[in-house]
Image 1 (cartoon, helix red, strand yellow):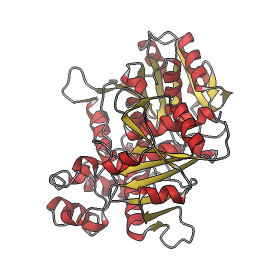
Image 2 (tube, rainbow over the protein chains, first blue to last red; image 1 turned 30 degrees about the vertical axis):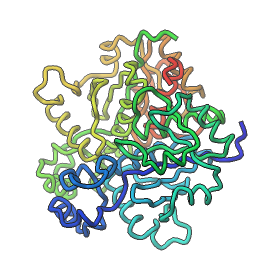
Image 3 (cartoon, each protein chain N blue to C red; image 1 turned 90 degrees about the vertical axis):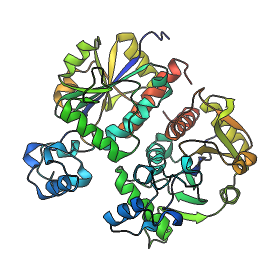
Image 4 (cartoon, each protein chain N blue to C red; image 1 turned 120 degrees about the horizontal axis):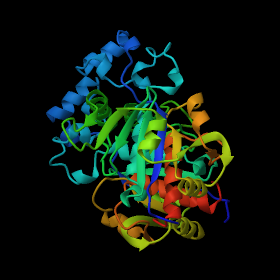
Length: 230
Length: 230
């Protein structure tokens, strides 16, 4: 297999965002923000803290799970595939931001430190905040804009309803067509119509639902096998 | 490949323990325990909170990293291999406890909830504390006792200095000889002499160090390939 190009994984509609304005005055949100000496709008939405506050929030079953991005990034960035330089990972978030991640970024292992880092990133737009060449930065852009920026011809989706295929073959198909590989970064529910409409193909790797970080890991191992890295 | 028996993974000398007695009076330990309304000896040792307190602690570079067990368990229990019933995972800890994990256990995704659960487990010996058939329970026992209890002929180690081999072949070797597969559950340093002396063979899957959760994941995928699960 041609090892010229890294593969690109995009976590789609990921459940990572600052507490939205409509929840700023909710007691649970205020209490948690105060305890940390922060304004509500400068803290991360987290269902383990804001469960009751999120009761009436639109699409609540898809939001407030930063742990999904955390564990997926720890699986992706520590992989042999990434250490060999053959992985690019992008985080598309529910509110429509794209987080760009340098492959050499060392994501905090501790969840609470990760939360602090993501807050800093979403507030200042980059980390470190004063760097000209940041490890992480955020842009508000569409997935189409992202695909164009990273020179991809389109995106394929990992989805429960997709055609059953081995991860290695999914990666091969993505490379041959110069497609990015999209994986849902949310806990429940399905992709938005917009994303389903734009996808070039849909694949599934297992006959039961899998968590995001397991799917990320299996796709990466597919590429490691294909490239004979491990 | 014969799919009669699940494979057994043991996380060895894992960096998961309650704060040891010699640190109970350290200001950072007291502060964190008070903030959570707990006694110091009933909180988990965590280098992200207790870095300074751990300065003079024996083997400090191997201790206080419950996140390693957390992420490894999330990767193990959500894997297709486990969903198909072909994985048993045991946590051997630095102080010498063994945690038994029912395959159907749903580990909290949120780190802070995981910490609370592990504290409950190490204090009461099982979770739920009043169950006759708990999801998780702890015994103080040696690795030799564990191997005997689970009817294994011995243990092989994943170790940087081991013989380079594909995960699939390592799993095959373990099955053919009825060995458990040992993976270090600590962030730095090496296994204790005692563990190295008892191991039947040592293997490595990559030419650079890997974090525990990546090694766990690659061994599990090796078994998934071998058993044609994905």
